[in-house]
Image (cartoon, rainbow, N blue to C red; front, side, top):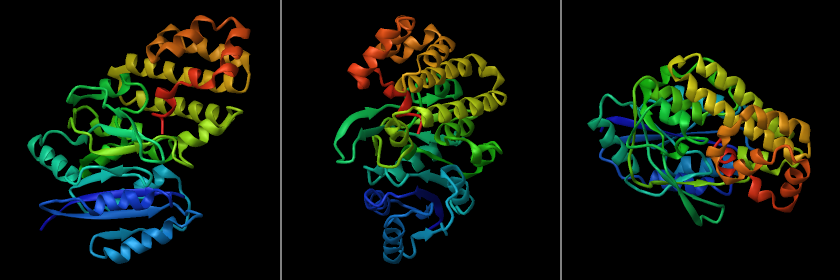
Amino acid sequence: MKLMISVCVITYNQEQYIKKCLDSIVEQELDCQFELLIRDDASHDRTPIIIEEYAKKYPTLIRVLPGEENVGANVNLLTIFSACQGEFIAICEGDDYWTDKNKLQKQLNTAKKFKDIEFFTHPASVGGDDDTVNKIWPCQAPTFFNVNDILRGLGQFAPTSSYFFSKKALVALPIWFGKAPIGDFFIELYLTGMKKGYSLDEVMSNYRTSSTGSWVDTISRDQTGEKGVRAFRMIKIYLKKASLDFPEHKPAFLKRLEYVDFAIAHQFMKSGNYSNFLRYINKAGEGIGDIGLSAKILFTFRYVKIVILGLYKIKKSFLYAQTIFQSWR
């Protein structure tokens, strides 16, 4: 059978999740050949040992790429992409897993049907470390979507574990991708490009919220807000870079930048830095009301310091803009 699909798994310190991830991949049922490529980013736990166990069990299926050096998620992805031999590529990060044994076959069939489309997604269940499903992550768009849909959605457009795309589409990724603070969103943006994408309306994977050591977990645990401020400021820089490649979508990029300013404002509020909170929430503007009730309240009462800081101390979770922070992975 022809090798059609390369499944890419990147992982770092995910010993408690990686088995479920790999099991969900090796159990896929397909009418063609696929390969599973794994690169661990120099973990300090048992993740590499577990990966080697699977590689020995499935020697004709799994290829393990050397991972002695920690290079970061985006460079890790680029490294594994360059080793792919399949016509199509699917991604499942080590803390996520697939829930449908026919996921790859269904997306391959869809790709063969819509030959002019190169990027495919689907919804996912969303849960915690105990695998309890809390909600469904929709793809925030109709079946067919474009760059404008991706930009106007809150946070990340689709779950990373749903990504399925043509290998040849990778040439669209910008040269700065390896240095960007996030990867998922820019993969969505550039692989959809000037064409359109397709979302299959079936829940076929699971996304873990705030898995231990993840980007979201790191930001949410930082009570000073310093890590979050640095991260979101970097996101702004790369959003502006991306906007130069999509000039016809300038209004949508400006709206996206407003959302990031609100995220920065929230990080300053975590540390009680009211002056910088006020600076960034004013930069974000009234349009952040699209995010939800908490954003509307913060903007409405932004000049009443005692209310802003008081609300945050009373119930932090109420003011936590989850739709933003848990989507920027």
